[in-house]
Length: 309
Image 1 (tube, rainbow, N blue to C red):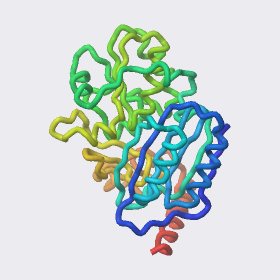
Image 2 (image 1 turned 90 degrees about the vertical axis):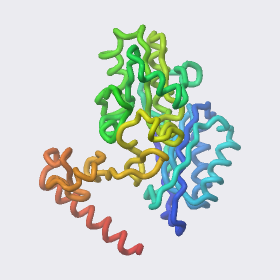
Image 3 (image 1 turned 60 degrees about the horizontal axis):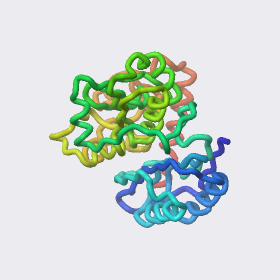
């Protein structure tokens, strides 16, 4: 089961800001295909873009639209029984997604190992409790996100598992954490959903004390003043903003559209950077023929944007 349905008509918006809603909930869905279709029918009638993933284990995604559209999709999900969603809103000055996608998958976040996030999860910590825990010497702090997300920013002292996908995390645990089952393990991710599964995995494997940041980095940045923060850098997000910082304000990182890595303003000035074509992290990983293809794609994107103006 892995199907994607996209909204046919492009989403346009005249308002100065887009409301961005990140949400998830682990909840049994009896007929995911039916829910996907009803969501598709709904999003065709409102001003929405982004991605929602539907599976038998629940729903996950980030969507953006005007205030009315966000309220409509939020209420729809509440009426469907998703009344315990982890739900966060922020703003984007520009349209953060090109289209609206409704994906049908086996998992709402793909770990590849069967766990029970509704029944077996770690201890949730709010930002203040989190700060107190991760400053302790007897705590192992792990960033469960991918390597390019870690690059944009992370918590002080966090370990980078160097994973390219979440599917690699169980192997990381096996190779690097098995000898630390008696230690306090603290984990975090962007919105909290990965840690629902990563903490469940560790408890399933016999770890005794497992903690995670409730609401993830986004909630932490929303609620924690910069003066009290243990966060360093920016938080990578999977939309047109690239990254956000304290107050969930848009950051200064930009995305290399060839490889997806976040780039600092300084890295954009390097000779290796060509918009939509290459950066210091991928310039040696693609051929000249591929780069020409990227240039053609970028020129088409630029031309399409001019037509819309």
